Amino acid sequence: MPPDKPWISHAEIMSRLCAEEVPHFRQAGARIRRYGAPVGCVIEHHPRLARCMDRLRELIGQAQRQGTSLATGTVVVADSLSGSSGRFDRSWYAPPGGLWLALAWADTLLPAYAALLPLAAGIACCETVRALGADGAIRWVNDVHLAGRKIAGILSETITASDGERFHLLGIGLNVNNVDFPPDLAGTATSLRRVTGRRHDRRRVAVRLLARLAWNIGLVHYCEERGLETGDEGASASATALFLDRWRQLSDSLGRRVVYGYDVIRDPLYHARVMDIEPGGGLRMELDDGTLLTEHSGEIRYLD
Image (tube, rainbow, N blue to C red; front, side, top):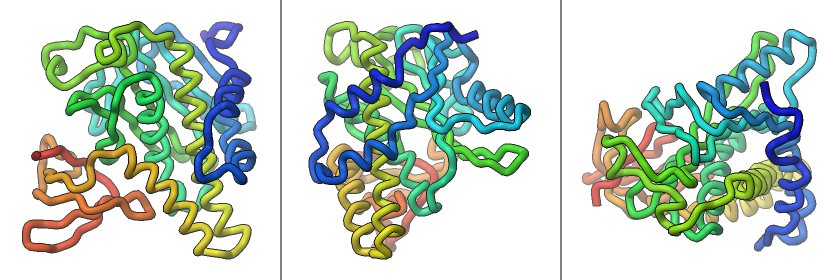
């Protein structure tokens, strides 16, 4: 059972969020924060879980049986995970010292904007890592790495409860103070402590990460608002373009030679060069014969 006293509070997250700089969106800052404010409204902290996303599914089911709905923005945090996994059920090493959490967000966005939520999580992770002294970069879709070594990963799923209510689940794993990795990860993983040479307060890291998540999710909602409220597709496109520009600034995928596949490790499909990110979050790539393709799911690995 979670402790009576929250590990971190919603007030701490909101205080951090209000302290953040908001370049390009100063006039709309209050509205963006309001959209993102539910992040962390409920926080469960556990010493150990199998998977944070599984716990969110349990909470969604419990709320449904009680005739209510899980509060959007509910976060589950664990000090360690025993059954964690990433994409395609790959094992994810989640010992004490890392930050392992998952967020439930009610599915209220139009599909074109809901597709930006995983990018929002990637941006939030990368901004957090950089603010703490590590020069991380996003590899599409949402790995954050430093010179090829993975420091954070995001897993996104959309689930539908039996009553038809839908939630987006965003699972985030961030290597904070853990420095020992199993042999199969020793050459491909790193942590904030390894990179910065110092221990980090996991509570403060969590507050910063959730504040950045609140801002970027709020920004996705604001992008939608600009189109729906004014009926001005150009205004919405302009706001979305600024959101995608932020992703481009933080990513090192553009211009890279990559191998692409739905499950690229088990079944690589083709080599290409990354050209750009598209408004719906799809990755535009050019094959060797000049053919342009856009992929909205799957993954890439760098060749150069």
